[in-house]
Amino acid sequence: MKLIASRLRGMQDIIPGESEKWEYIEKVMKEQAKLYGFRVIRTPAVELTDLFKRATGETSDIVEKEMYTFNDKGGRDVSLRPEGTAGVVRAVLETGMHNQVLPLKLMYISSCYRYEKPQSGRYREFYQFGLEIIGGNATMADAEIIDLGNSIFERLGLKNIRLEINAICCEGCRDRYFALVKKFFELNKHLLCETCQSRVERNPVRIFDCKNESCKKVIRFAPLSLRYLCRDCADHFQFLKNYIDECGIDLTVNPHLFRGLDYYSRTVFEFIDDSGAEPLAICGGGRYNNLSKEIGGVKINSVGLGIGMERLLEVMKKQGAKFPENKPCEIYIAPLGGPARREAVKISHNLRKVGIRAELDLVGRFIKPQMKYANKIKALYTIVIGAKEMEDKKALLKNMASGQTAEIVIDDNFVENFLRLREELDKTAVSQIENQTENRAENQAKNQTENRAENQIESQTENQAENQAKNQVESQAENPAKNQVENQAENQAKNQAENRAQSQTEGQIK
Ligand SMILES: [Zn+2]
Ligand SMILES: [Zn+2]
Image (cartoon, rainbow, N blue to C red; front, side, top):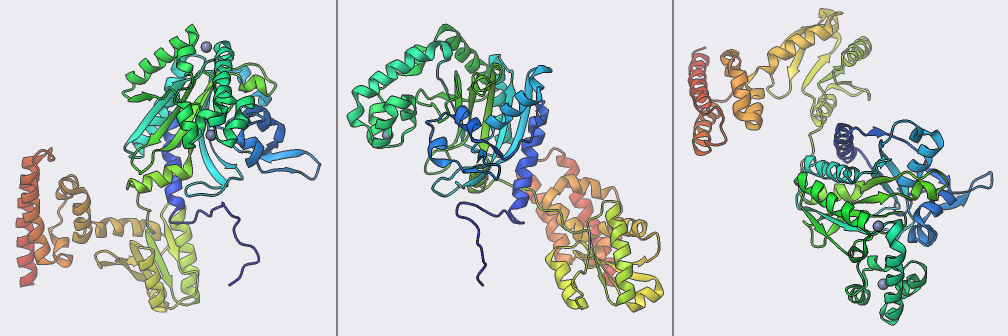
């Protein structure tokens, strides 16, 4: 097969199987951010190139090398956004949101574009989760952003995530410091890599980001911003450390952390994953007090962070983080013949109307491949409607896990019939086994209040029942701490074993 066009280099398709993981992460992020009072903002993927030039700095790698820049049909110089913050600040200023109540707490998940050399976990189209507190002047805003970022990683089950922070001077104290840095690198220019040599004149603090070994040696002796903070900056940094401490988050001060963007002042931070061979930054952010002014608006002190979605997902997978299971199809309807198909369309329509995940044959298959399909999509229930069922106005509803069936009337009350029968069939032993392996004691307590013994006979093999009871008693005895309802659970297990033994005997007699 040769397509006339294949996917562009550095781009990716996120297909089912993977897309659910994205949805899950996005859901957690949004829920968590809403807890902190954040609201969603969406801005265009294309903006005038000048916006990004002014925001990230003319001399940044992003603007110089990585932007997707082109003239649109109206001859405008436009670019695909290389990051999220500039567009958000532009939108705030343009819509006048900042004239209402401050701070504005905004979040977004945006596609961003950078024409970089593709490497693992890095794409030319990538997604950024962003949080911005616009008009958050107090140091508590920095702390809140960091706490929120950290809480997202916790909720996603990540481990070994380390917070690094640095104080990088403000408008008041940065000139003096930058002059010192420049002087230092000028003196050591001959030891720097080619890129850094060109940075000395234009933007010397960028040299701190260089990964080149010889540059790193020089950087080690460079003057550190921490020593040249003005009084306000020093206070801010101390308060920030205190607040982060109050949130119970460990932090490391990394005096060499500057981050690539021009617009940061005072606080910069990164969350770093330490579980791999090399430390990997999965989140970065900082305070940007001058960005709004830089792009022609009023000065609004702000702070924000960005999380690269691809990298976060990569780290989650690497760490074996858990993703929720997909919700399966609740009922699969297999029609055979014209009238049954018409009935199936009606039934599935009505089921979905009340929120039940129903599917029906859309291919025109015979019964066997239809059932195969139902198995493949892990349908919980199936119903086959053929000519006979249409005539009788009855069909068999089958619980796919237990194999148990019940007669369901096909009439205008099909949805109610289904819900009632499902509840009965759900109480079968096989589904109980499933519950037990997953939820153990909790479900048992629930299950036991109802009389299951009769249903259990049909679908539970003898050995299973015996072993289960034994295992339960044993594992509960072994892990008494885990059991909040020790005695209760033990009694339940015993009762169960007894019930089962009894009903098995009855079954055998029958
Ligand atoms: Zn300062
Ligand atoms: Zn270098």
